[in-house]
Length: 122
Image (cartoon, rainbow, N blue to C red; front, top):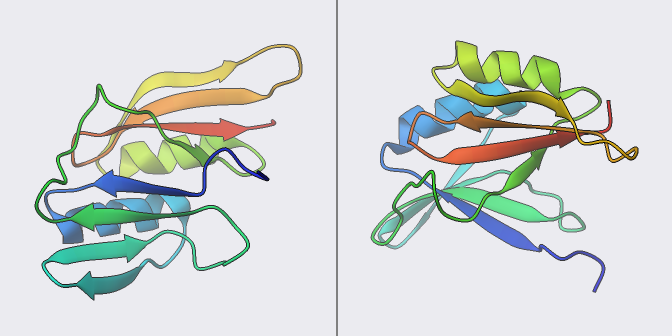
């Protein structure tokens, strides 16, 4: 098993709002896919990487108390945290040193009410 995680879904209630938020935070364009009654926004199109999506549909309920997903914060997660706040989210745990050379983490609330983590080495 190369990775403990191979797919994740971030539930959303307002797909367009969430898509705009994550495009601003991640600095990417999110491709939209309709899968029957479910709308998905693909966060990675690299078949060799861990994939994930924004998901709107029955059973997709945002939460700040469920499983916590950590997105790659790149070289330094501080700029991504700033973009999260500018895009309508809020920082819940600021950039924090994990210690033991494990890098840094932070948590933010997205526009849908999900608590999401970020990780970077710097």
